[in-house]
Length: 141
Ligand SMILES: [Zn+2]
Image (tube, rainbow, N blue to C red; front, side, top):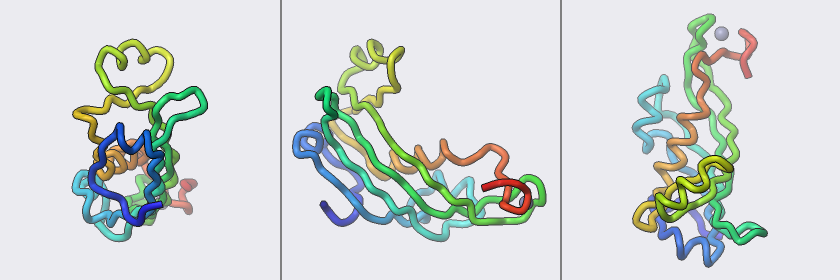
């Protein structure tokens, strides 16, 4: 288990070693995420593992948790939204392989054998944010 989440890692090496990463990424370091938040406060707790599953398929699995500043679309108050996501990406190393697998799973195309871990976490967090967030008082999470 390595401490901290590297910016980028070599995909093939990480999968064959079964690399694990654990650490925090400050929200302020993720500019595309900050752009949709009320502020860049706090950090994301990240656990990631590169591995082959029981069928020998390379995957990147893990979880991301944190609290993000959003504006409630009902009462317009700012609140801390609890982000909790699980990640399970099937890694593919060529576009041909990506096309072949598209109908059976959601493949993640690895380019130049590089996994950009911060970018990837940022992307998953962006996808998880509700389109119309609501605070707890307005029936949200
Ligand atoms: Zn509200």
